[in-house]
Image 1 (cartoon, rainbow, N blue to C red):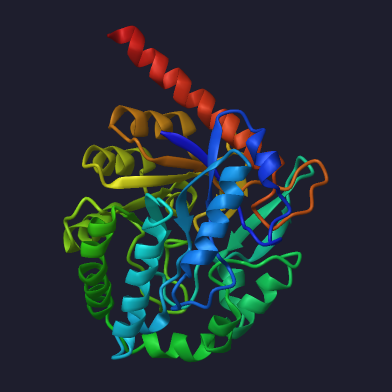
Image 2 (cartoon, rainbow, N blue to C red):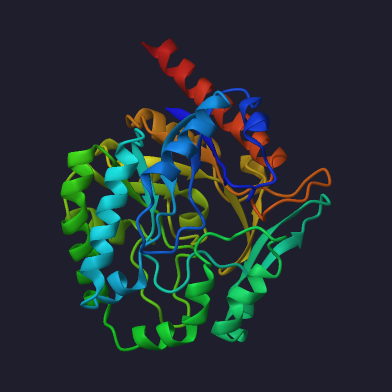
Length: 360
């Protein structure tokens, strides 16, 4: 297992590589090139420069997040093959800088969404929050503008300007698509891309839908154990795997996160884990919280234990943190609370590891 932190290059992050290097037990970062338009090839020279910057700071770069999938692929349009070819070329380029894991999603129109990015918590910190009824009150086309308006000038992955321009039109498109058609489009993508992921030794790790319940009639595919089973059956290659995001799946109180981890980690299909906690006030109203188990609804010990006991040997990162100690940063991606989260998760991992050593 390697503990890493998400980091955004090119001056698009308030956190520096030098600061990340000082977090005990953190060995690397998951990064992205946020200025490359969705669907275009990530240039090799840019990737080499990114790798050099990270390595020079004493950190590893083995994980890339958010090579986002062009909407034409999700829609199943004739133009999808060009964008799939670009995606394959990007995977090839990633392999040339020794990337081992690629985290992506197949969420239609919207990536993650929140009703508030700076919700005040009782301890004086702020965190991202979700209220389903408040989301449904908004004009779909205005949601992205609302979120970007609270992003402190940083990019929000999955909320690219070109996506916002077509949001209302794209939502209308999906009203005429069945769930099975959407699954077929996902299978088409996997069957085209996974052979090249195998060839270039880059494990594909799909991220769950965030939140995992339906918004504006858009299809949801990676949101519970049954759909994850279906997804993995679409292409049985071990390179077709998962990013288990405990906060995304945990937003639905019916999901048993440790059980999900036990099943798919034992199959070797979990390549990456985003670990964070959430606190519900009702079924579809929650805030993100500190990582500590008692601060939310999820049992972090059982989550870490399920990963360790079932052979997980991939990458973990503490996911979205609160804003604490007066920090001003991209929502969810400040330094302080994520550093606390990394230390806490590493402590749980060490405890589980030593408990098993004592039993032998």
